[in-house]
Image (cartoon, rainbow, N blue to C red; front, side, top):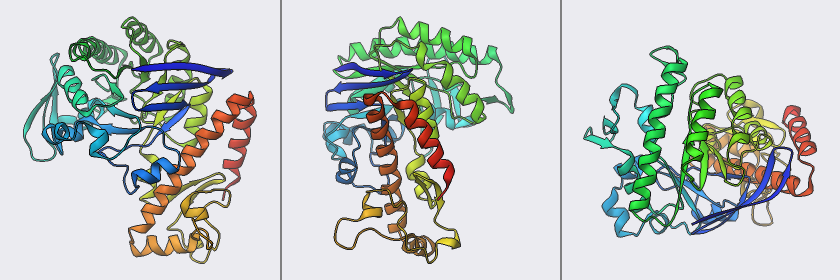
Length: 381
């Protein structure tokens, strides 16, 4: 089940509400990534407390480990990872693409060697739908081929991108048919491909719209292209998608990317950046980015972000949060608490940024919010 309500607009930016089988999601929304059934270093209860409404799981990795037998035993991913709210699962297409020369693509599907144990595996649109049916995700993604920015060291041509896009369209039809055969009660999203070519993007989204799917994603960005190329495609594509369906920009990105994506009409985002950067001592704040490993923070008594109310910055008792100096110390010592607290902060920052954008859209002042956001970020910590 999926119901999408458009509650307000401000220019191209949209404020909406998604109703799914495991709960309601207020949009625009950022979805923390839990590839293996966990958002790295963060308890499910902490995710809920900081305002995460929906999280991701990955079909490819969960198929390999723990495997479908275990997931069937638990009745799906929700009970297995103790998360009661909505889950979206990626189809595995991006992970197969990332295997590079280890995989062989045909009309039927993709053959590849398991990166876990070397087993020979075969993933098709139908198998992807069957895996996601076992996972029980509220939103399943179609199996697609992620069009690369470069092919064999050269920029992908329009002809190559077109062939890839048409293959993804044929796979989308097979995904729809298998999803219906399984009588999956959840929602299936299509993925717009076409590389860096606007004409191909329009052809892809028009054909996907004819399938009448509950929602649509923009794929094939943030795959190595220059930032300005990604921005061009993001500025072009969302507003051409069906206005009564949710729009999802896959794998993007920085705080600036989120604000610009919402301004272009995107409703949903995901990215590993908050947690991946946290594990490398890179923190996002209202006033720019902070690198914990920098010696300038060795004696810094300030919290990560004085304006932040996360557990790391504000704490949960009389003493308050921890200092930059303490986190610098933990980072230099390799203590596991450093990436845990950093992940909590970065996710809280992203989720709070989305909350502020929803409020700005409700008040009809999104442009003013965006201008203030960019000015604050440029100011620096």
